[in-house]
Length: 485
Image (tube, rainbow, N blue to C red; front, side, top):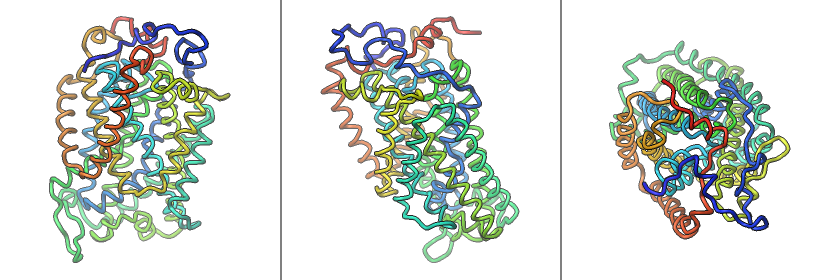
């Protein structure tokens, strides 16, 4: 946990290079600063859209039903409770160090540049994999209108999301807000239909059964629930988008925490209530385990309602793609500004277009995202679950270190029950990691090992000119103010 950076030092300590050799991020430049243009409402709309409750409900949750059956709602509820502790960590760190770099800026400043680099790699895995995972679900919900190959449909959604990500952030907040309303309506319709066609009661939520091979009920073990927690954490993972948008939020010292906590609360309700309703309303365990929510909606109502819900979900997936591409491009933009790459790459990723968006970074995340739509879905799910869990663990470590030295008196939102919350979170997440499939741990571990080699061979020898995590000037000045009562 050495080699940490103080926010106030990152811009001042870098040595001066001759102008013709200087990296574009080596000196202050207004063109490298994102514009503060959104408030809590706009930030919450964008962040909720990144959680994309309806598309998560219709694309990710069915796989949990297939594995956990009636224990799915309980697993998501436990995951949501864990996410409250995670949200506390994000809220404190996001107001202490509000940067478009998100997790890596927070962890680098508090736990060391190597830890921050590893968080950056894990977050990059998540932000590159999640959009295509969601996008590939589009084909299933366009089926009432047109039949498409899931990979091709996902690649098309990623292309549309990339084009939208090149626009002004304020315009995207309104676009995603309209789509968000439609997906909330779809989730509400599913909840109402599930509850009004209930086949079982509250006791089913604790029965922990899944359809067996012979058509009967098989018990779900506690260990299986624990292994499913990595995906359950992924279900509401998008609330962290608020810290990626912190450079563009007005008054980030107040609005980051408000956006993070409000988004987690709203998204947990939007996802969990329909999951409970589906558990109640499924005609039998085989239908529940099958996870075909669209077919259940049609059976509970009629084909017109089923088509309406399916189209709303398709729009929700496109919505999620737009917001995730926005988030991901900010991560690459910030990494270039903090000089994580060779100078020519930094120059490209740090370029802003006419709408103020980092257009090269947007293309750099959108195009590979389209390509990932042709990769095995189970592998993408597994690597994402491991990456999210590892990333949350390192953020919790940073939160445990957030009240040392100068940071102790910085002006920031402070979580309740510190340090108990991060300590408990570290223990639980470490245990959850041990319960994941070996192949998924191997994939994620191999990528992390390669990233560590890059750190050791390229970044660390150039520690004075590379990987200098920065905080915007207006935030740095605000951090020097004494903390409030």
